[in-house]
Amino acid sequence: MFRLSALIAAAVAFAGPVAAQTTMLPGDTVQRDLTASDPTLEDGSHYQCFSVRTVQGEGLQIDMTSDAFDTYLTIGTGACATPTNADADDDGGEGTNSRLTRVGDGERLIIRANSLQGGKTGAYRLTVTQVSRPGQAAVAAPASGGDGTSIGVGQTARGSLTASDPTLSDGSHYECFQIQTRPGQTLQIEQASTDFDSYLSIGGGRCDAMSDVVSDDDGGDGLNSRLTFEGDGSLLTVRANSVGRGETGQYQLTVSETGGAYSTVDMSTLGASRPTTLPRVTSEWDLQPDTCVAAYAAMTTMRDENTSPAEHGNVAAINYGSRIGTLIPLTDQTDAGMDAMGFLLMNFKSMALVGAIGVAPNGEPNGGRPLAEYLTALGNCDRQYGFTPVTAY
Image (tube, rainbow, N blue to C red; front, side, top):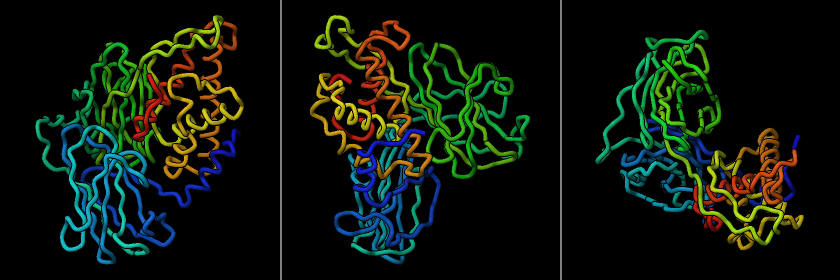
């Protein structure tokens, strides 16, 4: 099994207690306790972290209430400890409770549940509510079988698996959607639920008889599902399903277009035998904290070995160790999670070095494409978490 470098291990130690994130959906309420073991901000106040996927043009209201302490609520994007594009509230709710609203832009919203004063602990309640959706029509209810309901990029559908929905051979219920793809378009579909373990499938044909099926169980946060794929102009069927037999409850299905190709980079300094220009590519790597930490760590290890592709854009000026320290609290730090990040690190490093050389292991020229994919993934991570992206990517 691959292990992470000492650099990442040091970043984990530097980051202190981990603030795990819980995914919420509109309509959800959670009851939690701030404890002395929770991470703290500079003022000594403890906090816990949540996230919710927003929909373009749709309003959300987040309420935090407590009888044990004066609440303080922050929402934004990026890392929970240091969110960007942030709004905060102390007493916008009733009494000393907090309330914030925001119109969604399709990004994942970070919610930080906090106390106003340092050292305060106790029980609290956090609620996410859908409010008005100015200028955007709701997606129709999902279909139980056959072709499914149409859904487009930037839309979110909220459905509910019920005992009356059709079942697959394993006894699990499902509902259906359809999406029209464009050639070269990179799409990401997410199914999230706090009621059951989601299972997502895409393919061709009718929902109850799909062909060329690609499926995912836990590719999203927690037990949620996520699939990323490149469109070919066909009409695809999307099946929202559960892992377990007979499971029912509410879910949310979101379709988004991921970041793709960016400008080329001059590689003439690498020598005539290597690619002089990187191709325009689309990165299919997800933007989870674990993936981005591994991408940043690959760059730092290559620098340590004097093999870094630092001549590209502003790579040499970026402090990737600092970015690792920011994202480490959001990662899976179990043994399995650390091994997975180590494996990703080696993958990214191989892509960068093989792409810089311009020759694949089988001796065939690759035109620098693997390096272009790595730098594009790096830039997409930068934008996802509010960092200054590597130039041209």
